[in-house]
Length: 288
Image (cartoon, rainbow, N blue to C red; front, side):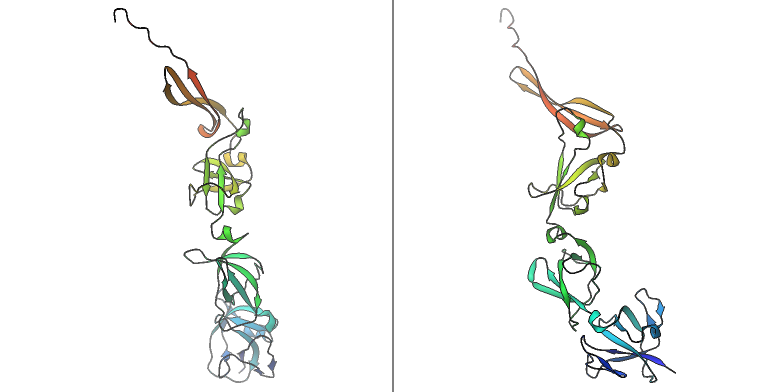
């Protein structure tokens, strides 16, 4: 009966005959197995990997050979397969908030690459890292799960602020657009230069370094490539409404705003104006 054994060894060290030089552990770690599972949990045939290097779920790298011996059999889970030890490497990450805090992981980060900014999954508060470089294998390496990749640390840490301006199609207003604004730290980096819908209204998205945050988190739809795609209807009409009345001496001041109406909803504001209705003092009654 032939079984497969796996010998774990450090990067840069070579296997000789049926044994590998420089095994981790004392005595050397050698696993004998006839049953192996892939990353998805399904059974795989280890004989197909003879001569290759495997990273198992324990984080270690093992060379694979066949053996006539049959010691205690251990089921294993294979995470990655490599052509050589040098490819079975680790990744060094640097904390976005502390350049002296680093983390070494055996998880494969090649899909992101050196220089990428990644958010670590399952952390509260948010933890973000820069993938600094590949590094030799080390027993101190740990697993690392990426939640998402970001263009910079501030965006990853939600320090970047975004200004949302309600200006869809307001260029059709005489006198130019206006509209309400939202400043948020919600991650909208993928929507910059586009439009999102908040509370049924459409807003353009831009980064900003000024202004106080009005909404830390935001529930939105999108992003949309254009105003029309966001609004899903053309401009229906514009109407002017009186929004406030105030007395100024004997005069009545009416504050008015022209509003854009789409699909029966007010979606934006055009120019505002104050209309003064002049008054006169009431004549005194005779005999008063």
